[in-house]
Amino acid sequence: MFKKIVAIFSIMLLVFSFSGCQSGESAETAATNFLNAIKTLDTKTIAKYSGEDGDMLTAELSEDEDNPEIAIVRQIFENMTFEIKSAEENGDTATVKAAITNTDMNVVFTEVMNQAFSLILSGASEEEMDGKIMEYMTAAMENNKDKVATEEMDMALTKEEDGWKVDVTDELLDAIMGGWDDAMSGEGDE
Image 1 (cartoon, one colour):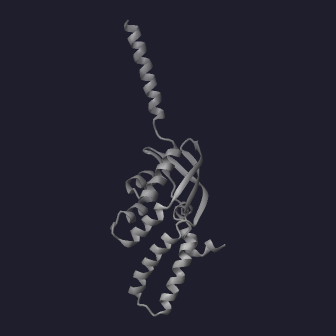
Image 2: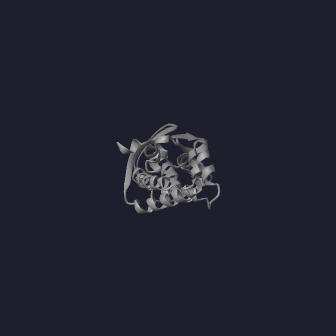
Image 3: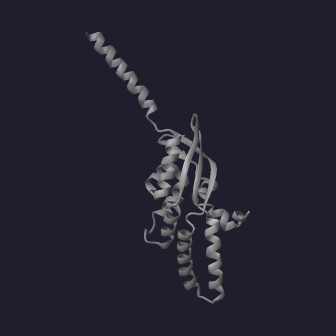
């Protein structure tokens, strides 16, 4: 009887030790959680999955919630969708292929710049321009939310002691923001 109890206990110990090794989430789950956190601006989860790379991003997003610039960031991210295409783990590194779709910022900026140009020609003060530009941006985001850009990309992840971390690259930031950097630099026109 004692041998049976020891055998059962040993089997349970083995099962728990193996399941403990497997209980960490996958790189695919980490990438999914990170992108969902971006969509909802969940700064704690963004920080969890981005480590030092996301410190600047989460610090800026954690500032004044009533800031109109943060409202625009919320508007940008709430339109983002994504599809995980595949995930490949290789030891402490992983590549997650994702298609990230968001409002096409090239279209939005074109509309805003056209309106801003008219405002400049009217002789508006800098203060008036700042307020109007924010209005134009909000309206352009709403007017063009169905005009989207999709970026297929490889997200690099690294496994650290506390789990998988997403390498927050310029390419990733540009994709989740609908081509913001490309639109600002004029590369979105090509």
